[in-house]
Amino acid sequence: MGNESLKTENQKRRSSTLFVCQAGIIAAMYVALTYVFAPISFGAVQVRIAEALTILPIFTPAAIPGLFVGCVLGNILGGGVIWDVIFGSIATLLGAIGTYLLKKKNPIFGTIPPILANTLIVPFVLRYAYGVDDMAFPLIVLSILGGEILSCGVLGGMLGISLKKTKGVFSKEKSKK
Image (cartoon, rainbow, N blue to C red):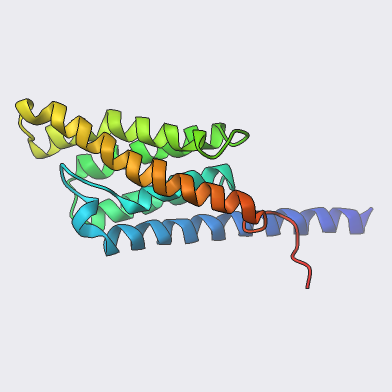
């Protein structure tokens, strides 16, 4: 009985360590991609390449906090105002949760929640936090939608399909050597 309990406790520790490590790596990747592609990651016309990572909750729940923390840090380092940091990051969090809920589906379906969340939230952030003109608002919505389709839909979809085919990157099985 004592050995079984010890094994279970060790498995729990390994599992939580893996979760924290995966979340941290995903957050770091999000920040790095946002920073490297900073010229197109911010503003009224944006294609945030890091948003392709919003497909990852299909493969690991650790991606949800990882993406949120990465987005918070990316927005802070990118010079975003507080409302952008808060609500832009919430948009990514909601998209990641939606993707996780669709994890049993085709990875392409997992791209829909972040596209919707960002298209519905980010234009209002740009309007109220940065003072984008009301007349330009419909164009801002279309611009954000287009950028999200490219980053989440196309790049995220390709990433999801590739990861689905590899089947080992996020699996809990030990690799055989």
